[in-house]
Structures are given as structure tokens and as C-alpha cells.
Length: 600
Image (cartoon, rainbow, N blue to C red; front, side):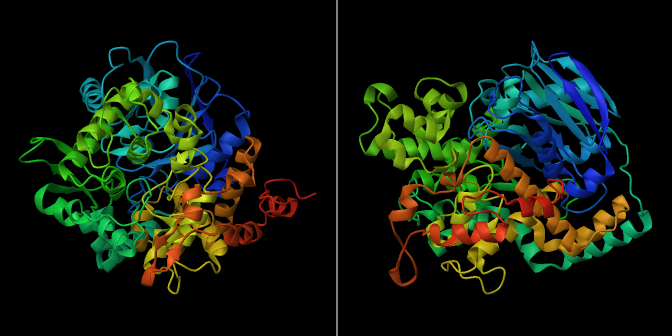
């Protein structure tokens, strides 16, 4: 594997080989990106300054035909949280990046004027992007594809939100996004508008015959898997019904955990009345994605890719909004501007609650009605946030910073951890999710632990309301996800490929003999390295916490038993099983065992 180092200030392009031992220890994707950031990024710097590093990483098995191995990982320091930020993007960009002859791209410095990077069959070039600056994602993508005129070319770019450095701006690839944490703002701060890749190079496979047999076996598993095929029908959108049924669907800024009008915005309504076709990612048979169109009534003619569950929730029940038409429009606006839909919906619901509690002056919002359920104000705020205009300029910095502007009385309504807005799963009804939010390296994120399975009793025997062994469950899940992220594997279709098969794929591609335990140690190594980066940035165990509401305001559980999160019951167990001291710092013995410091 080789990395392209792009110095935007000096306008230089340089190739570096990635050592085999580094790949063995960190696998690819997220792991390699985190290692590079740890080695090369100084602490305490401004994430939007030229010294920050932005990098894209693929994996050895990406673009080799392995189903679901599509997730390119962007790594940087987050401008929203100041933590390590690892953000994944599916679709076709990552595999095509490898086929263009580049396994990783590392951006240093800041360009004097807007540029984009073009890589065609291993030949990189920086090109002026001044004509593209100010354009939305769709226009930017189409203009670049028309200009390059290469078969199977793929574009990753920012919209106006990234250019304006909205702190939760995304890097977009059509309907796919590196969302969460503001990676698009970092790209905008570097005057980097886009990356376009094209090529037909075939990645190296050490044992091609064995590999082809593995692909046949895995393909048959996907074909015969009931969970995979069921997921393919509706993707994540069926979670609206599921989370509402279990009472963990955060509603009106996490004030309650069930939405009384959930049927208006669930997957059944979406697929019966709006979905026009299913989509899929590169070399994936699951086809869990969708196109949707508003065919009549308000906003008729709007076409968008998606939405996923998180958008149906964040712009829906989270904002008290049962107007599915408006949610589809909100989804499309976020795709075009390049905004993370979770944080966008959460800053809006934060503003709505503050408004209803009389904590926002009429002068500040210029007469706008921010009541829960007002679809017009939700859409108006998206425009203001993306353009950093008026009240939107305050919200564009996220709920934590917005609360500091609006006053300390609003802090308890900022539903975030370490500055990152929470996702659509109320941890009062799923205790492990609460621990996952609190300890996620990039802040209040559900994906770095991906504990949604806890709700459905997976692994078998897991009680979502129990505190027992949740520290071990969260640690194991986080390490497993770190492995999958590093190999570019989509965790949404994880039922189709076991960890044993990932071992076989990695060994056949690289020629390195590894075991499941070897991969799990890699995941643990990556998790600990991320912790070290955050500790270096000044984070402590005091930051491993949850919003006050989740700790003291109960929601009804089964038989109306009141449920809050007793985080202290899980946190020390988590530190212990991680091999960290009581302050959440990895011990010397743990770091030696994982090869993060010399064993001397």
C-alpha cells in the first residue's frame, strides 16, 4: 500500500510506502489513519488551522471484490470536539480510489486559493477550484465528472457548509457522507473543494485462487442470510418502528422516548409513498439504500437519496415533526449543503426547547416560530446554518458552543458528549449505549461502538436494561468495530461476514497469517491509541459522561418502571477491562502488551 502526501501550501505531491509491519498492526483505514495522526499531529493546535492534518485511508481488501468492504475513512482533529475524528463514507469512492492507484491521501497545510485533487491511474494533479467555490455538492460533482470525462470516476467534495466551516459540515460523495464532527469544515479550511479519482488498476492479492473461493463462500452466505436480506429491504429506516416500540426513540430533544406520530414518518410510509428505487454500494449485494421522490403536495418534485433512520429521527420525532415531506426536503438540503443530519437536527431541537422555555430572545431569531413540529422553521434554520447567517451562525458551532452564547441556563438542553451531539437511541432504555456514548473517542457517537444490537438482544442473553457486564460488552464491541472500520467493512451488513471470514480475507490478500485474536488485539490497539490522542489533547475521565437529563430525568421502561442511566456502575468496570487506571488512563502494562511503547 502507498500513500500520496499532498502539501497544499507548497503545492507538492509525494508518494510514501506504508510499511508491511504497520499494516499488520493497524490493518488499514481507521487504524492507519489514527497511527499517522498520533505520529505527526502536535497537540493543542487549531483544528481549522493549516497545521491540522486531513487524510483518507482505504484497506488492503477494499476493491478486491469483497462484499460490503467499501468504507473509506477520513481522519483528522475535530473542529467540533477537539477530539480525534474518524469518519467513514460508503458508496463507490473508496474502492475507486484504490483502483486509481492510491491507497491513502494525506493533506497538509492550506492552499492559498481553492483547489481540487485529481488522481487518474496513479497520476495526481492539483487543479484550481475557484470556479467551483460556492457551488453545492451536486453541481460540484457534475461539473468535475464532465471535466474529467473518465469512466467510473468518483467525487468527494464539500458544499457551502464546508466552505463556511460549519463545525458539523460533512465531506459528501453523492448521498454518502463523512459526517459527524466537522471533517467537511477541515476540508474547507484548507481551501480544498474536492477529490476526484478514476482508474482501473487491480489491487494486489497474494493468493488469488484462495481469495476467489472465499468470495464465493461469503457471497453465498449473504444470499442465504435472512437478516441480511431483511435489512436490504428497508435499510436502517425500519428502526423508527423498532426504537419507538422499545421506548428509546428520543423525542423533542430527548425529553421523552416515544413519538406519538411515528407512523407518519416510518419506513412503511416512506416506501409506500416516496421510494422510487433501491441503491447499493460498490460490489455489495445488500442494496440497503434508496432514492425517494415527493410526487404530490407540498414540495412536489423534490428528489433525494435516502433518508436513513438517523435523518428520519433527527428531523422527525427529535424535532416533534411528523411531516415526512419536510424531512425528505431537509435530507436533500443537508446533502446539497454538506451537513451532518444528526448534528443539524440536534442543534435545531436544542433551539426549539430553549425557545419553548423562553430562553431565546425574539430579537435574536427575528420573529421565527421555533415551536416543536414547525416544519417551516426547521427548513429555514438549515439554510441559515449552512450559510452562517443570523441565528444560524450561532447554531453552526454545535449545541455546546451555542449554549455558551445563549447562556448557562441552556446548557442542560445541549444533548452532547464532548461537544458531539447524540444520535437516535435513548440510553435510558439501553444502558450499554449510554456507556458507549460516554466513552466514544469522537464524542457522543453510536457508531464507534455500534451497540444498537443491545436493543434486540444480540449477543443472545443481553438485557438492555441491565448494568451487568456492560463494560466488557462495550469494550469488545468497540474493538470489533475498530477492526471492521480499519478493513473498510460496513458494520450495517455484518451478519454477512464473520470475524473468521475477515481473517481469511486479510490473510489471503496480504499473505500475512493472522487469527481472530490477532485482529481483536489490533482493534484494542487502535482504541487505546485513540484514547492516548484524546488524553494528549487534555481530555480526562471527567469528560466520559452524559448530559444531565439522561442521568436524572427518568423515562418509563417496561411496566412503567422509571429508567435513567447510572453511568458510574459501568464506567469503572469499563476502565478495568480496558486495562486503564481509575482515571481512565491506559496503564504501562496495557501499552506494553499492545506494542504502543517498548517492552523494556
